[in-house]
Length: 317
Image (cartoon, rainbow, N blue to C red; front, side):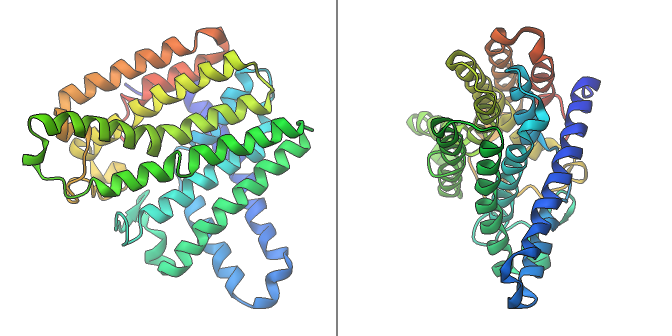
């Protein structure tokens, strides 16, 4: 199934807006007092922009925009936070690709950051993107004159989704799942593996997707009911997305995917490995149905989020 034109427009618009925001914010690093250090900040800036502008779906910024719109806030007023979530996502990709972790040479069809700039610069570029993201979110909270409680909640949600309670914790569990032998997935160990896999993807993938949605709702000063609904949607669509990603890593076209597919080589726990491709696809569709149900409080405002839920299990890249 091809992408719905409405979703395609939303992602293109998110990409256009957030890329302009990101370029402006990263280039502002060059105007900081640290320029007396010579070429180092320039190289760092190039490394940051290399990965930020390497393409990608811009899914997390689009989620910030759509959640804000569902809750009555103009997406443009959430622009800095949308950029923040994309910076966090990009930092995670830079670090994931490092030899100490997934050891990938290709990302989005291009050489990975450390292959171009070296490991040290790649690590620092990731660090810089993560910290700059929180600066951007804080700027957004100030521009909307959020209360102290609202601003701290925005920072807390993003930190929880990206840190050890979320994405980083999931990545650690994912690393620990490498070299899992097939014979260890039989009988009682299969139940353990399922719990482990659910933990990995709830944290590594779904947590930042959920944080993106909640951030948009917080900026819009949405009700608790709406925030919970978006949180439930985020978890469901995040798990569907990751299961579909695991399936693509097993059977998809590597040229279209733009990545080398290291999961199988590293003997990682994945849904297809544990359940098979067909059962994994059925599980993804179950999570999509749950995602649709979670959007009931938003009516027609959530049309794009409905489109996204359908798309994550039908995409080929």
